[in-house]
Length: 296
Image (tube, rainbow, N blue to C red; front, side, top):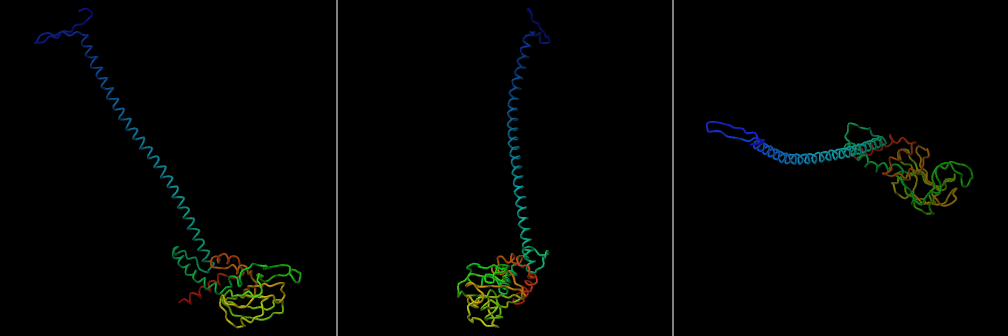
């Protein structure tokens, strides 16, 4: 044949003739079939790998988000722990200050709960403290007309130290003892106080009530309890109008009565810091010891 190569293969069975163009066609057919199969397989494999990569990306994003959440939660936890630590430290400081003010040692070997329990016991003893130290208003609180300290005397018209505080009141307002006491004096004073009562409290405290109505409600040497009636307000002595002149003294030193008027269990720690002319630490320790011995 023209333009064709013939390949003849002879064996015992005879001769076979192959034309080169047929061989090329078969090779091309098998080659194309292989390529198509390879491409199909590759497409499926690539799709499989792509799905796996998508799953891995989703897992990666999930892990990244979880990591971020853990970081945020950890920061919140750290902030919460720091806040709790500050609160704990603040409680420790307050307890330490209160223990010092009450004359107690700062016992670091005790747990916080033990110290709080101990402090609660002392807290109960505060009732005893308030029975011994003048506190609260001796009359119904209608305001203050004259403060403690230097002022122009309303009658003498000169600078004088006002040793007490003037409480507004109408004539006949009941006056009550601000703490347990014994009546030291009850009568008329010619030095401007008019009719007055002096109460001697425990631990060196004294209270004075001036310009009272002359009524013998209590007598010298009489014991009175906190809240017991001791007399009535008036306008006797060097007075420009009805009121109660009220003084608080410690070993005959005049103190700011306003601190004692506002004293209660809630602001006792503030009170100790306001009035520094009294050795509170040893005094409160003595009161606490006496209260503890009484309970035993």
